[in-house]
Amino acid sequence: MATHGLLTGTTNTHIHYLSENKGIHQGIITPWLRLVDAAQTAGFQLSIASGFRDFDRQLNIWNRKMTGELPVFDLQQQQINLTTLTTEEKVHAIMTFSALPGASRHHWGTDVDIYDPSQLNNGQQLLLEEWEYQGNGPFAKLTKWLNENAQHYGFYFPYQCYQGGVAHEPWHLSYAPLSTQFLTELTPEILASTLHKHEIEGKAFILDQIEQLMERYVYNVQEVTNG
Ligand SMILES: [Zn+2]
Image (cartoon, rainbow, N blue to C red; front, side, top):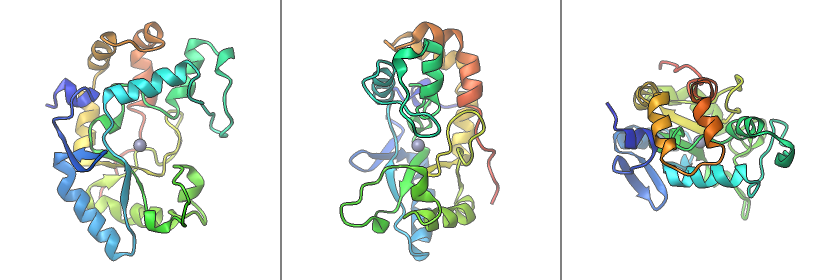
């Protein structure tokens, strides 16, 4: 059993930092490095854009989105005018792209957002947008390779397609042997008791709807493919 601290990102004792800000769960160091090696042999520089994020970081993002300090977009990438929305509408709009603090898979260190820096031209910024991973996008070939090979190293894409919860995130890779375990262990009760202790925008609504929100945005992920 994982601790509540690990499951909700309120501790980082399970995290190994490959470099500053690039943290992964200690248990995925070996499989991750094997995947990086295999990708390198295939001609890719598989890299982490974002690994472990803690509860406070996710809480900061959440509260700034709820208050309109950070922009929120819809599935057509149009900015949403939050001032016209109810709390319920805001929560759903935000959860399509951002996890509730305490319920981000990035808390676990088993999930990473990936890219290939060698495919970016001088000065080209990584945006983490769908087009970069499709068609003629800079990471389309890497994505295709990962879709064919990642499963042999234990990795898969939990947000492979939009199924009414979190948007399609072709950059979000997960180490299934650990993340499937943590997903089962993170119950609505554990999340609720953590959120209860923090100043989170929309708290009353979130706590009231915690089971429905988790069903739609946390448990509603792609099934693991076996390699
Ligand atoms: Zn991610």
